[in-house]
Length: 488
Image 1 (cartoon, rainbow, N blue to C red):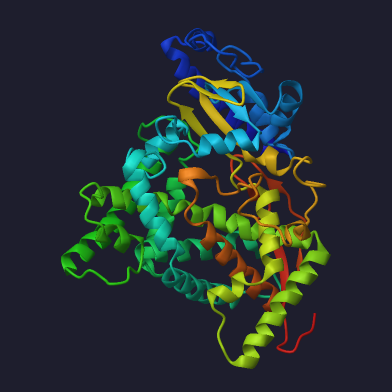
Image 2: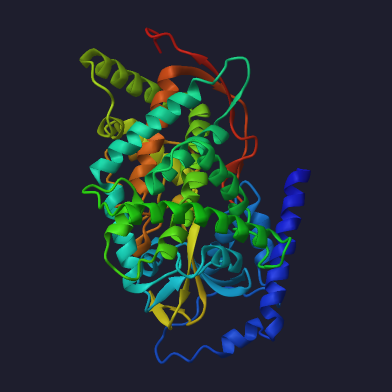
């Protein structure tokens, strides 16, 4: 409890500082209202409140975010004002959407209507050339190149081999007389797999240096936007510079070799192969660091949450284990190794992963900034305002899902996920996460080897939802190796 309270006040203090800093130029919430031109038609600002002067509703938003129902801030206002409402959080007037249709429209809009919006500390760390921040043709080019590579059979084969190797290496060290912390294990595995896919760096001294610097780097993502020696943002920026040097050395080595591989082995090869002068070495190096974040955050949390939910639902665990044991025996009888399509062919395992994404809400939502007045479904989104598409409220809405707080993988059986507009765990539109298929593959591989190699019991743990989703005690489990002929 004290840890939560302490973290809450640290976060609130940081946000208050940011808000006061943003308003130091004399802006107030009312100046935003005066700047909105009168509409000639019936579209009006959504209902809602901008809260207190300077502070808006940020403190209440953060307070709810630290609870076990972080969506309560949104849901209470949705009941009062409707699915789309106005608020004032993180120092800016904001239109919040818990309406899947409205959010989908915004996410599919181009840069003439909406551009990404992030906290100042994050934009400082990412830099202007980050794929998260750039817009227009360059963003589409990079997103397209990386997306195509991530969907390639060649990379899926490589990811499968790497995941199998790293999972096996990790599990070989596990003992039955001490708990295994799933969150730590999956972070280590996923980071190595992703770095290999990005820059072909193998485990070793250089990987250890990179990971150490990366740990310092990510601490700055939610830090105060103060770039002075000794501050967290300054330390994180210095850590990123050291990581960029490592990637630059790899890029320069590839250029000096004069060899253009027929089949790219990693993302660096993919981007170097493109002849565009816009894809500079600095841009490539910066983006390789930014793209390492899912290896530390999204993918490991997905695997960890799946173990948490399975531990709480014995029926789902039994069916998933049975499905994976059947596949393991079948491949053993045929004398063939498991390939990526085997893992993704297991319907119930995929339903478990889908339900984990729905309930876990690793990405609670995305923010955009309106570049002009936008009208949709009778609502006005004013130019300069932030738009917050809040996925969590949609994923836990009883109008979309029966018993939404109940882990129920069976709800996804025989259901077309692609056409389900109420399910957006990876965002959507032109900035849809290009690694979504790989995240599923990695989670499938980990779950398969975990349940087929071990019997296990999980200790009680609690999900923390802010500032990022994680398990409070790092998901401790006790494992015991299965015999080769071990039955369920």
